[in-house]
Structure formats: C-alpha cells, structure tokens
Image (cartoon, rainbow, N blue to C red; front, side, top):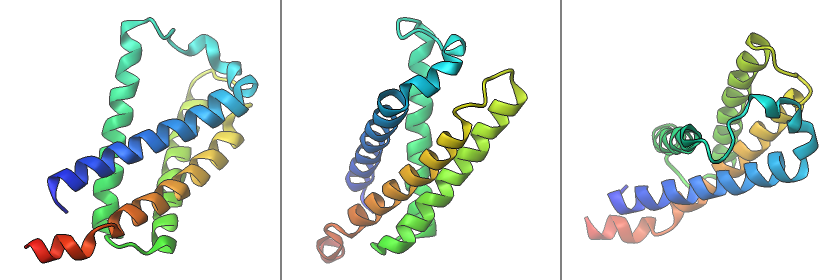
Amino acid sequence: MSVMRFVGTVLAAYVAYSVLYVGTMIGIFAELYTANMDLMRPQDDPMAMYAYIGHFVQTIAVVLLFNKAVGSDDMKAGATFGALMGLYLAATDMTFYFSMKMSTAPLMTSVVLHIAIGAVIGVLLAKLYGIGRGTENAEA
C-alpha cells in the first residue's frame, strides 16, 4: 500500500470512527453517558485534545493491523476483523468501568457499540483496500 493510500485510509477511518462514536455516544445515548460526565475533562481544557491524538494513534494501529491480518477487500473478513477490534476496545472499557468508581450503566451499550462500529469500520477498510488495487499493481 502506498503512503498516500495509507494516509487516506487512516483519515477516512478516523472520520468514520468519530462520526459513528459522536453520533451514538453523544447523540443517541447522551443521557446514558452523562452518568460519568463528572469524570470527563471540559472541551476547553488543554489536556482534552490529547484524547483526539490517542484516538488518531489507535486508528493508525487499526489500519496497520487490518493490512497485516486481512489485507484484502473481503467484506466478511473486514467485518470480522472490525468486530474483534471492537471487542478489544470493549474489554478495555471494562477495565476502566470496573477498576474505577464509574457508573457501569453505559457499559453494555458501549460493548455493543464498540463491536458494531468496529464491524462497520472493518467493512469500510475492506472497501478502501479494494479501491484502485488493479491500478496500484500496474504502476509497480
């Protein structure tokens, strides 16, 4: 995969992740997630931006892992990969919910969202992997 394709894939996945998580966790399920609002940094806190950087690094890792583990335009394999990545994120959430004094009310919703959004991202990565594959190989 060329550097430009990789960067484009990372950016597309980052935007898709952001839209899906903001739309569900802040949009649809906002009341549920307010249970732990007191633990979150306000948007004007200078440290809050580091969450976006961390999410960007996670997205780079997901794209790299997809290219190594799936490396094809197989949608089913992409969805499976994405769901497994979502399961990993859900397990990470569980460590926070149960190791800190957080409300566990949003946990099951988070688990389902991580797996579902992961599957969607996996399908997106498979679609993006397939775009232009014939032309990229012809250039080499």
